[in-house]
Length: 486
Image 1: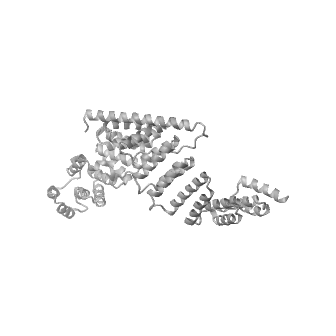
Image 2 (image 1 turned 30 degrees about the vertical axis):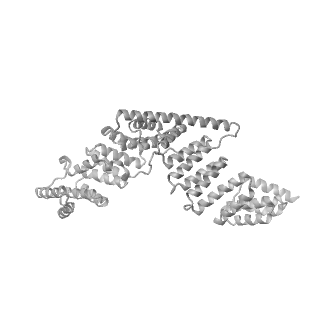
Image 3 (image 1 turned 90 degrees about the vertical axis):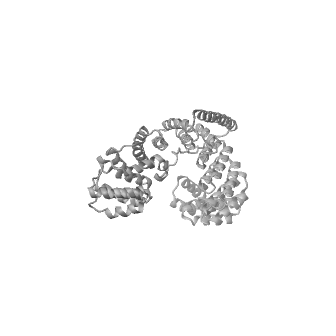
């Protein structure tokens, strides 16, 4: 726990840094506005999806499993709760006493052997439950679940067995049966914070956010200290798109734990959901200043800057994201390069492409190499370097001889250079690929029309229309037909 003085010092430091971040952001935005006053309307903004933290969080990853209080609570499950327990005979009680003594002496193998000896269809479900508990302690989850099921089949009101079975199903991410077990526990009067909290987690994992919210609220009511339940409630707000409530809840949690990066990042995502990207950017920059940013948070920061036309710092954010996890994020990095190229931020695109090639040099698939070459081709066109563009396109075709798009672009390149024979060669190659046949024949026909060969162009246009009818191509075909008749 933090002392009041330390909390205030950290909060003041955070406030100061956030103020500096806000000042820098506003200055950059003002500069971007001056630079783009005479530009055309902005491109479509990059879609930034708010994320509720670890959306693929498994039951195994919950922090509570390592909590000493939870482990103590589990140990207490060996103790019978007489009002909801199966009965035992006098002889069974003596046998169970011997089992419990072995467990107390940490002689689990001996306890297992004795329990197996005493288990049968007529024996009390307590034997099954105790054996399942030992398996659970030994992390033999499948065996434990099987034996717990035997216990609840014998005695359907066996609350401890239902609860521990529910715990196992959550651990195994089997959320539908976990819900069944945990609701049974609560209906039998066992509605403690752990049962409600795990029920909320299971409902949330099944995308049932409304019952998840209700369960998390009950868990927090009974246990206001466990962060898992509060984070779960915040994520349930995300799934219901109640981002304002998520921001408010996370703000309270941040006051108590200002060093927790997950809270800051979740709040940044909530601001994105509210349509307040600049507030999100402030938080993401602050988290990066603390040295706790993630690849995902930096990619999001770059997307925000793209939408604000701050291309230089967007590229910088993307490259920092790549450095965070150089073994992954190839596709995400390629997407960022394509976005920058589409925004005509060619210098930044060139920088990012070079960084992608150096960072992922030994990881790039042929398809990814091809995509990089296509971006380089676009850069060559922007520079007016037709020969460089052709070289890049030829590398693409070398990597993938069936890349119809590259073949058509090569045909157009040689057509512009006046090399009709080479242009037709590439158009015909592209026409041999079903997906590109119609487009290739149209480009081929356009080349023939430019050279005055109207009659030769007509069969190509008619064939293209049969494959993929288009209104504009039909109009062009009719115009060529009229000219050809003269």
